[in-house]
Image (cartoon, rainbow, N blue to C red; front, side, top):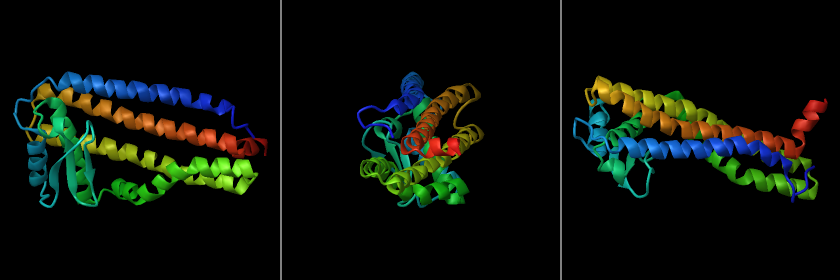
Length: 233
C-alpha cells in the first residue's frame, strides 16, 4: 500500500497531462488561425446547422446560443444543438466546421447510431465513477477494506468505458460533418483542408482524455494492489 503523502504512481499521469496540454494548445491555435478565414458561402454557424438539419430531414431539433467559449454540444435528451457565441454568429471555416460537427451528433441521434446510444446510456454510471472512485479507494485503504478499495476501481472503469466509446462517436460526427459540408456544396475543395484541421485538432482532445482515463485506471489498479496481485499470481 502506498502512503497518502507520497504517491509514486502519479508519474504515470505525466505523459497524459503533457498530451492534454498539447491538445488544448493545438485546438486554440488551429481555431484562432482558421477563425480568420471567412467561408465562401457566408453562412453563420447557426444558419449552417439549421440548414444541415433540414436537409437531413430533422425538424425537431432546436439550434440555440449557449454561453461560454468552446461549449458547443448537442443535447440528445432535449433535442437541442447549442452553439457558443463565436460559432453561432461566426462565418469562418472554423465556425462552420464546429457547427457541422455538432449537427453530425444530431444526425447520429436521428439515425439511432449505436455507439451514441451506448454513450448516452453509460453517462450516469460514468459520472458516478469519475466522482466516487477516489473517495471509495482511499476510504477503503484508510479503513483497510480491500473490498471498498476495489469497488472504487470498478466504478472508475465506467468512466474509462465512457471515454473509449466517446472516441468513435466524435470521429464519426466529424466524418459526417466533412461529408455533408463537401457533398452539400457548403465548402469548396480548397476549404476542405482547413476544416479538416479544425476537426482533427478538436478530436485530439478526446484522444488525450481517453489516454488520461486509461492511465488513471492503471494507477488505481496499482494503488489498490490489484495489479500487483495479478502479476504475482
